Length: 312
Image 1 (cartoon, rainbow, N blue to C red):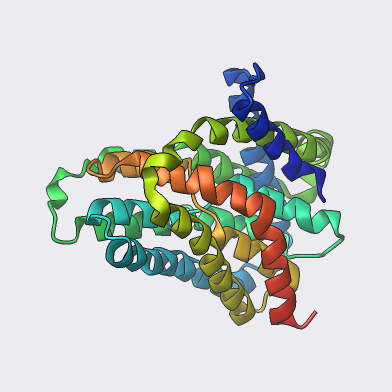
Image 2: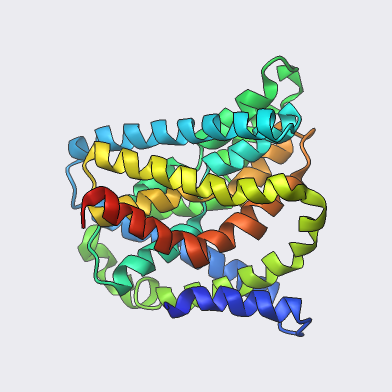
Protein backbone atom coordinates (compact mmCIF):
# COMPACT_ATOMS: atom_id res chain seq x y z
CA UNK A 1 0.00 0.00 0.00
CA UNK A 2 1.18 3.54 -0.72
CA UNK A 3 2.71 5.29 2.26
CA UNK A 4 1.10 8.67 1.58
CA UNK A 5 -2.53 7.75 2.50
CA UNK A 6 -1.21 6.13 5.67
CA UNK A 7 -0.22 9.58 6.95
CA UNK A 8 -3.92 10.50 6.90
CA UNK A 9 -4.69 7.31 8.83
CA UNK A 10 -1.97 8.16 11.34
CA UNK A 11 -3.42 11.60 12.00
CA UNK A 12 -6.94 10.21 12.27
CA UNK A 13 -5.85 7.51 14.74
CA UNK A 14 -3.79 9.99 16.76
CA UNK A 15 -6.76 12.28 17.32
CA UNK A 16 -9.14 9.43 18.14
CA UNK A 17 -6.72 8.11 20.75
CA UNK A 18 -6.36 11.64 22.20
CA UNK A 19 -2.69 12.00 21.38
CA UNK A 20 -1.21 15.47 21.94
CA UNK A 21 0.01 15.51 18.32
CA UNK A 22 -0.67 18.90 16.70
CA UNK A 23 0.38 20.61 13.49
CA UNK A 24 0.96 24.35 14.12
CA UNK A 25 -1.65 26.49 12.37
CA UNK A 26 1.05 28.51 10.61
CA UNK A 27 2.64 25.33 9.24
CA UNK A 28 -0.72 24.02 8.02
CA UNK A 29 -1.32 27.31 6.19
CA UNK A 30 2.16 27.15 4.64
CA UNK A 31 1.65 23.55 3.53
CA UNK A 32 -1.68 24.36 1.86
CA UNK A 33 -0.16 27.36 0.05
CA UNK A 34 2.73 25.20 -1.16
CA UNK A 35 0.47 22.44 -2.50
CA UNK A 36 -1.85 24.82 -4.33
CA UNK A 37 1.01 26.71 -5.99
CA UNK A 38 2.92 23.53 -6.88
CA UNK A 39 -0.12 21.95 -8.53
CA UNK A 40 -0.85 25.15 -10.43
CA UNK A 41 2.76 25.54 -11.60
CA UNK A 42 2.95 21.95 -12.82
CA UNK A 43 -0.29 22.30 -14.74
CA UNK A 44 0.75 25.63 -16.25
CA UNK A 45 4.13 24.28 -17.31
CA UNK A 46 2.50 21.39 -19.12
CA UNK A 47 -0.17 23.65 -20.56
CA UNK A 48 2.60 25.67 -22.22
CA UNK A 49 3.56 22.54 -24.13
CA UNK A 50 0.04 21.89 -25.44
CA UNK A 51 -2.03 23.09 -28.36
CA UNK A 52 -4.74 25.27 -26.78
CA UNK A 53 -7.22 24.46 -29.55
CA UNK A 54 -6.82 20.76 -28.79
CA UNK A 55 -7.56 21.24 -25.09
CA UNK A 56 -10.46 23.69 -25.50
CA UNK A 57 -13.17 21.10 -26.39
CA UNK A 58 -12.03 18.91 -23.50
CA UNK A 59 -12.15 21.88 -21.12
CA UNK A 60 -15.71 22.75 -22.20
CA UNK A 61 -16.78 19.13 -21.67
CA UNK A 62 -15.20 19.08 -18.20
CA UNK A 63 -17.10 22.23 -17.23
CA UNK A 64 -20.25 20.46 -18.38
CA UNK A 65 -19.36 17.57 -16.10
CA UNK A 66 -19.01 20.01 -13.22
CA UNK A 67 -22.53 21.28 -13.90
CA UNK A 68 -23.97 17.77 -14.17
CA UNK A 69 -22.72 16.24 -10.91
CA UNK A 70 -24.60 18.55 -8.49
CA UNK A 71 -27.72 18.07 -10.61
CA UNK A 72 -27.38 14.34 -9.98
CA UNK A 73 -26.69 14.80 -6.27
CA UNK A 74 -29.53 17.23 -5.54
CA UNK A 75 -32.54 14.93 -6.19
CA UNK A 76 -30.89 12.18 -4.16
CA UNK A 77 -30.55 14.53 -1.20
CA UNK A 78 -33.87 16.34 -1.69
CA UNK A 79 -36.17 13.50 -2.70
CA UNK A 80 -34.62 10.38 -1.15
CA UNK A 81 -32.93 12.00 1.82
CA UNK A 82 -35.81 14.41 2.45
CA UNK A 83 -33.44 17.25 3.26
CA UNK A 84 -34.81 20.76 2.82
CA UNK A 85 -33.94 22.57 -0.41
CA UNK A 86 -31.21 24.72 1.16
CA UNK A 87 -29.24 21.87 2.71
CA UNK A 88 -29.71 19.59 -0.30
CA UNK A 89 -28.47 22.32 -2.65
CA UNK A 90 -25.53 23.27 -0.44
CA UNK A 91 -24.32 19.67 -0.13
CA UNK A 92 -24.81 19.13 -3.87
CA UNK A 93 -22.68 22.21 -4.52
CA UNK A 94 -19.89 20.78 -2.37
CA UNK A 95 -19.91 17.58 -4.44
CA UNK A 96 -19.95 19.51 -7.71
CA UNK A 97 -16.77 21.28 -6.69
CA UNK A 98 -13.47 19.46 -6.08
CA UNK A 99 -10.80 18.60 -3.52
CA UNK A 100 -7.27 19.67 -4.40
CA UNK A 101 -5.68 17.24 -1.93
CA UNK A 102 -7.65 14.27 -3.28
CA UNK A 103 -6.39 15.18 -6.75
CA UNK A 104 -2.81 15.37 -5.45
CA UNK A 105 -3.11 11.88 -3.96
CA UNK A 106 -4.48 10.63 -7.28
CA UNK A 107 -1.46 12.08 -9.09
CA UNK A 108 0.89 10.38 -6.63
CA UNK A 109 -1.03 7.10 -7.08
CA UNK A 110 -0.29 7.16 -10.82
CA UNK A 111 3.31 8.30 -10.48
CA UNK A 112 4.04 5.53 -7.95
CA UNK A 113 2.83 2.98 -10.50
CA UNK A 114 4.55 4.54 -13.48
CA UNK A 115 1.24 5.26 -15.23
CA UNK A 116 1.33 8.11 -17.73
CA UNK A 117 -1.42 10.73 -17.84
CA UNK A 118 -2.17 14.05 -19.49
CA UNK A 119 -0.10 16.48 -17.44
CA UNK A 120 -2.43 19.42 -18.12
CA UNK A 121 -5.09 17.86 -15.85
CA UNK A 122 -4.50 20.59 -13.18
CA UNK A 123 -6.23 22.93 -15.63
CA UNK A 124 -9.37 20.83 -15.20
CA UNK A 125 -8.91 21.05 -11.44
CA UNK A 126 -9.10 24.85 -11.66
CA UNK A 127 -12.09 24.75 -14.02
CA UNK A 128 -14.04 22.43 -11.71
CA UNK A 129 -13.82 24.67 -8.64
CA UNK A 130 -16.72 26.89 -9.74
CA UNK A 131 -19.49 25.13 -11.75
CA UNK A 132 -20.74 22.98 -8.88
CA UNK A 133 -20.88 25.94 -6.52
CA UNK A 134 -22.85 27.97 -9.07
CA UNK A 135 -25.38 25.15 -9.61
CA UNK A 136 -25.72 24.65 -5.84
CA UNK A 137 -26.58 28.32 -5.36
CA UNK A 138 -29.04 28.21 -8.27
CA UNK A 139 -30.80 25.14 -6.85
CA UNK A 140 -31.02 26.72 -3.41
CA UNK A 141 -32.52 29.94 -4.71
CA UNK A 142 -35.07 28.46 -7.13
CA UNK A 143 -38.33 29.81 -5.79
CA UNK A 144 -36.45 31.74 -3.09
CA UNK A 145 -35.30 35.30 -2.55
CA UNK A 146 -32.39 36.14 -4.86
CA UNK A 147 -32.15 39.61 -3.34
CA UNK A 148 -30.78 38.17 -0.11
CA UNK A 149 -27.52 37.13 -1.80
CA UNK A 150 -24.61 39.52 -1.37
CA UNK A 151 -23.31 39.11 -4.91
CA UNK A 152 -20.20 41.26 -4.50
CA UNK A 153 -19.07 39.41 -1.39
CA UNK A 154 -19.89 36.07 -2.99
CA UNK A 155 -17.89 36.86 -6.15
CA UNK A 156 -14.95 37.96 -4.01
CA UNK A 157 -15.05 34.73 -1.99
CA UNK A 158 -15.20 32.56 -5.11
CA UNK A 159 -12.82 34.27 -7.51
CA UNK A 160 -10.39 35.79 -5.01
CA UNK A 161 -10.43 33.03 -2.41
CA UNK A 162 -7.11 31.46 -1.51
CA UNK A 163 -7.53 28.29 -3.52
CA UNK A 164 -8.53 30.06 -6.74
CA UNK A 165 -5.83 32.71 -6.49
CA UNK A 166 -3.03 30.24 -5.78
CA UNK A 167 -4.17 27.56 -8.21
CA UNK A 168 -5.05 29.99 -10.99
CA UNK A 169 -2.01 32.16 -10.33
CA UNK A 170 0.32 29.16 -10.32
CA UNK A 171 -1.26 27.91 -13.54
CA UNK A 172 -0.75 31.30 -15.18
CA UNK A 173 2.85 31.61 -13.97
CA UNK A 174 3.68 28.11 -15.16
CA UNK A 175 2.09 28.78 -18.55
CA UNK A 176 3.95 32.07 -19.03
CA UNK A 177 7.33 30.87 -17.71
CA UNK A 178 7.20 27.47 -19.39
CA UNK A 179 9.51 24.53 -18.61
CA UNK A 180 12.72 26.56 -18.97
CA UNK A 181 11.56 29.35 -16.71
CA UNK A 182 10.44 26.91 -14.01
CA UNK A 183 13.56 24.73 -14.14
CA UNK A 184 15.28 26.55 -11.21
CA UNK A 185 12.15 26.03 -9.07
CA UNK A 186 11.80 22.29 -9.65
CA UNK A 187 13.88 21.17 -6.62
CA UNK A 188 11.55 23.07 -4.30
CA UNK A 189 8.10 22.88 -5.88
CA UNK A 190 8.29 19.47 -7.56
CA UNK A 191 10.92 17.33 -5.80
CA UNK A 192 9.59 18.06 -2.29
CA UNK A 193 5.94 17.70 -3.26
CA UNK A 194 5.37 14.20 -1.86
CA UNK A 195 6.90 15.00 1.52
CA UNK A 196 4.78 18.11 1.90
CA UNK A 197 1.68 16.15 0.88
CA UNK A 198 2.41 13.62 3.65
CA UNK A 199 2.50 16.35 6.30
CA UNK A 200 -0.67 17.92 4.94
CA UNK A 201 -2.52 14.59 5.04
CA UNK A 202 -1.34 14.07 8.60
CA UNK A 203 -3.07 17.32 9.53
CA UNK A 204 -6.17 16.44 7.52
CA UNK A 205 -6.41 13.19 9.48
CA UNK A 206 -6.33 15.16 12.73
CA UNK A 207 -9.01 17.55 11.47
CA UNK A 208 -11.30 14.81 10.14
CA UNK A 209 -11.12 12.84 13.39
CA UNK A 210 -11.95 15.96 15.40
CA UNK A 211 -15.21 16.25 13.42
CA UNK A 212 -16.08 12.55 13.64
CA UNK A 213 -18.54 13.18 16.47
CA UNK A 214 -20.83 14.89 13.97
CA UNK A 215 -21.58 11.48 12.46
CA UNK A 216 -23.84 10.71 15.41
CA UNK A 217 -26.19 13.54 14.45
CA UNK A 218 -25.87 13.49 10.65
CA UNK A 219 -27.89 10.32 10.17
CA UNK A 220 -27.35 7.09 8.29
CA UNK A 221 -28.61 8.56 5.02
CA UNK A 222 -25.92 11.25 4.87
CA UNK A 223 -23.22 8.68 5.64
CA UNK A 224 -24.51 6.43 2.84
CA UNK A 225 -24.72 9.37 0.44
CA UNK A 226 -21.17 10.49 1.23
CA UNK A 227 -19.91 7.02 0.27
CA UNK A 228 -22.18 6.34 -2.71
CA UNK A 229 -21.94 9.79 -4.35
CA UNK A 230 -18.15 9.61 -4.91
CA UNK A 231 -18.63 6.32 -6.77
CA UNK A 232 -21.40 7.83 -8.88
CA UNK A 233 -19.19 10.84 -9.59
CA UNK A 234 -16.27 8.60 -10.53
CA UNK A 235 -18.41 6.70 -13.03
CA UNK A 236 -19.47 10.02 -14.56
CA UNK A 237 -15.82 11.08 -14.71
CA UNK A 238 -14.79 7.87 -16.46
CA UNK A 239 -17.61 8.26 -18.99
CA UNK A 240 -16.53 11.83 -19.77
CA UNK A 241 -12.88 10.76 -19.99
CA UNK A 242 -13.79 8.16 -22.60
CA UNK A 243 -15.85 10.73 -24.47
CA UNK A 244 -13.07 13.33 -24.67
CA UNK A 245 -10.31 10.85 -25.45
CA UNK A 246 -8.24 10.89 -22.26
CA UNK A 247 -5.77 8.12 -21.52
CA UNK A 248 -6.45 5.60 -18.75
CA UNK A 249 -4.28 7.63 -16.39
CA UNK A 250 -6.13 10.82 -17.30
CA UNK A 251 -9.42 8.99 -16.79
CA UNK A 252 -8.42 8.05 -13.25
CA UNK A 253 -7.59 11.66 -12.43
CA UNK A 254 -10.84 12.94 -13.93
CA UNK A 255 -12.72 10.25 -12.00
CA UNK A 256 -10.88 11.34 -8.85
CA UNK A 257 -11.90 14.95 -9.43
CA UNK A 258 -15.51 13.98 -10.17
CA UNK A 259 -15.67 11.84 -7.02
CA UNK A 260 -14.24 14.46 -4.68
CA UNK A 261 -16.04 17.11 -2.65
CA UNK A 262 -14.81 20.57 -1.76
CA UNK A 263 -14.14 21.49 1.85
CA UNK A 264 -12.33 24.78 1.15
CA UNK A 265 -13.94 26.85 -1.63
CA UNK A 266 -17.51 25.53 -1.40
CA UNK A 267 -18.03 26.07 2.36
CA UNK A 268 -16.88 29.69 2.07
CA UNK A 269 -19.19 30.37 -0.88
CA UNK A 270 -22.22 28.57 0.55
CA UNK A 271 -21.84 30.36 3.87
CA UNK A 272 -22.49 33.62 2.04
CA UNK A 273 -24.94 32.55 -0.68
CA UNK A 274 -27.00 29.98 1.27
CA UNK A 275 -26.88 31.01 4.95
CA UNK A 276 -30.04 28.96 5.60
CA UNK A 277 -28.06 25.71 5.13
CA UNK A 278 -26.38 23.95 8.03
CA UNK A 279 -22.63 23.94 7.20
CA UNK A 280 -22.04 21.07 9.61
CA UNK A 281 -23.88 18.66 7.30
CA UNK A 282 -21.79 19.61 4.27
CA UNK A 283 -18.47 19.52 6.11
CA UNK A 284 -19.29 16.18 7.74
CA UNK A 285 -20.16 14.62 4.39
CA UNK A 286 -17.26 16.11 2.41
CA UNK A 287 -14.42 16.02 4.92
CA UNK A 288 -15.25 13.38 7.52
CA UNK A 289 -16.65 10.72 5.17
CA UNK A 290 -15.95 11.31 1.46
CA UNK A 291 -12.37 12.57 1.81
CA UNK A 292 -11.01 9.57 3.76
CA UNK A 293 -13.11 7.19 1.66
CA UNK A 294 -11.50 8.51 -1.52
CA UNK A 295 -7.99 8.55 -0.06
CA UNK A 296 -8.06 5.06 1.43
CA UNK A 297 -10.55 3.14 -0.73
CA UNK A 298 -11.90 5.21 -3.58
CA UNK A 299 -8.85 5.89 -5.74
CA UNK A 300 -7.79 2.21 -5.89
CA UNK A 301 -11.43 1.30 -6.65
CA UNK A 302 -11.65 3.88 -9.44
CA UNK A 303 -8.42 2.51 -10.87
CA UNK A 304 -10.08 -0.90 -11.16
CA UNK A 305 -13.15 0.68 -12.81
CA UNK A 306 -10.92 2.55 -15.28
CA UNK A 307 -9.17 -0.72 -16.11
CA UNK A 308 -12.52 -2.34 -16.87
CA UNK A 309 -13.67 0.61 -18.97
CA UNK A 310 -10.41 0.78 -20.94
CA UNK A 311 -9.95 -2.97 -21.18
CA UNK A 312 -6.58 -2.89 -19.45
